[in-house]
Amino acid sequence: VENELPEKIERLVRCEASAYQKLLMRRVEDNLGAIGTSKVRSVHNSVMELRNICNHPYLSQLHVEEVHGLIPKHYLPNIVRLCGKLEMLDRLLPKLKATDHRVLLFSTMTRLLDVMEDYLHWKQYRYLRLDGHTAGGERGALIEKFNEPGSPFFIFLLSIRAGGVGVNLQAADTVDLQAQARAHRIGQKKDVLVLRLETILRPKSRHQSVN
Image (cartoon, rainbow, N blue to C red; front, top):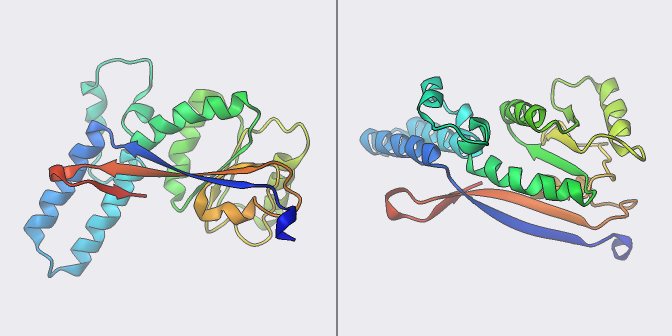
């Protein structure tokens, strides 16, 4: 049966953190060093804060709105410029759209999906969203909208925890590695391109990465 499946192509896309992300990470690291390793809860909170910063600095408790007034004007909005992953995604999505790809964007954080909605509004990309707040009856309707031939929706935003059992999204051929099995199944006619975005950090001259 597996031989009937189309090819699955996996790619790791490394995205360098923005200068603002690196600044926030240094603040977290400096605080962690002052706390010491004995306070496990503080260490755990610091790791979670780093994850938030890597996904998008708007998710960080350290983010301040005043930073927008300090950034020189640019053709890209701050929502893109302040985040290495989103800047990379902003390069990838137009190419995928131009070649008639359909995209599933999975995240473990619903707050990141909120940020993505703001970004997609700016890009004027038509999208759908399914997360833990989506009613059971509505889920099927959303999936049908995305899967139907000639669907105008380019991207489907999904919470990994919500987009689980019974979600069949064969129309999409570009997915996140953590949820690739939901698109790569019998009935999928296109090869599936799996992209996992990874933020590259270089704090204190150490090469690190956070997914």
